[in-house]
Length: 416
Ligand SMILES: [Zn+2]
Image (cartoon, rainbow, N blue to C red; front, side, top):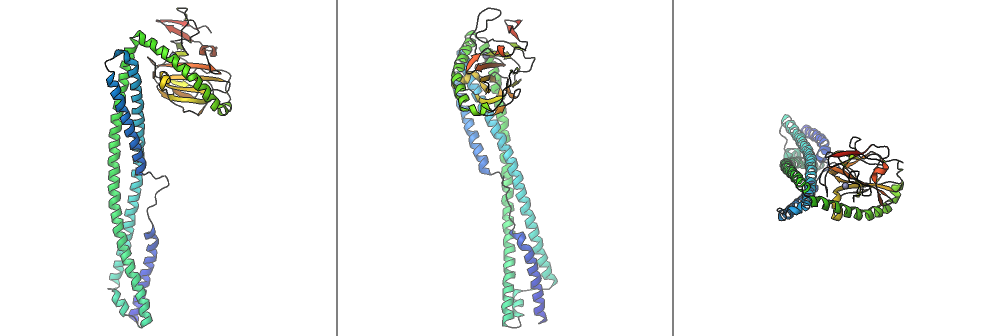
């Protein structure tokens, strides 16, 4: 009877251990809601591969016209498209690298959790073994044979079953945890290696972009040396302006409610830093102060160094923000802001754009940065003003601003 009581005490103690263990064993690694998945990164990789083949395709086209000097503008267009694809690829890889970092942190967390779980389970198991050692050998048979009668035997039998189940489940769980830890470690190493590979790819793309940039610079020199190419550029810019006139009207109708909700200032703010006040090309209807002849220009040109910020002349809604395609390629990266008083302002040849279509901008907000994309032969802002869709001389809207015009090495104050 004494032995029977002992066994019951032992079993009860074991059951206490078991109860303590149950919530712990039931705990599984829970992924956070914002968890990154490999599938997400694989999608990005597919997109990057598309951009890569786009670049290769453009390279083929470039090769085909490489020797033809009269195709300099066409080469510039292809190079810019290549640069856009390369930049998109660089951004894409940046996202991949970022996602890999998140994935690695996530996997490290899972691994640490699994290792901790394994450690805890193992300690509990050791405790049980130590306990059994201290209390002397306990075999399942000895528990059963210690039963005083049949009902005691039945009770003991159930206890033994629970002990056996407990032992088995702990062993199974320990083994499963070890497998999981092994897999987690392999996953982690894999993600780290893939992140490293992405970094190498990004460096290569950055070098390609630099190379494309210097090719464009060389082309600009080539184009500037060819009078007919400069004239061609002006003519194509007019075609672009004609093409976007209707597009601007259409978008202003489409977004009329939104545009109407943004009060516009009475005056225009100069779209460049104050010191950039010398025009290199005047609006078409304005007579050239040196030659007395009117030109054919759709806006004004203000030279400024690459990446000089360009400001919204008035508060309004961005109705266009694109790298032009078709005839509007001439504008390169351009932005149109439509204002509630029926005017709109257009900013062209940007190196990069800082706003997207549909965005509300306030007067003075940066909409992009000076560049020479599209039919442009040097860094400058090409600026247009429209009133109910009709192009006007932008200079007339800056009465308070001292402006100069520089041509053929001579500078003159602009009367307005
Ligand atoms: Zn221009």
